[in-house]
Image (cartoon, rainbow, N blue to C red):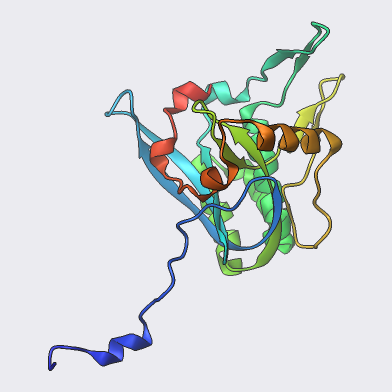
Length: 231
């Protein structure tokens, strides 16, 4: 038994962590685990590479990662939709959604540095600069406890996956507004609207989808299609 190092028990881990996603349609008390930049290889074109801003939250029940593709020129274009009456209306652009996400995150993780971040934004030359600044300002606050709101989104296979709510929209005058909060430092602030309650009920009652099984599945970059598919 001379080859055994019993001192290693001091750092040995007995519980698996980080392998299970947090459940959709819940408000979770979590720890902010930081932001980082990752590179994803394209599926359709193996030579293509796409960069993502990855923001992670964890608690004893699992984790949630928001994986944001770096914006391109098309990201500033607002999509146009039709309502039930056939009237067209604009939605927030991908870039507007990203900006709103970043500001909500920073406002809750390091509110004292929001003004510094906004003042420095005129000097940013790329989204890499945005990410570097965000990481620098949030890294000192890793493991800060916050609350996050997760809804459910159905993928192509009919599985319901945890996702952030829609946090911004465009009014009739074409002005962007913040429509919801995905994060808060205070308990009881986040909640679900009547519409979201209805969507939650529909998804939980949908037959082929097993909510418990779906929420337990692990997530990886392999689940994400090429960036071009999201435009």
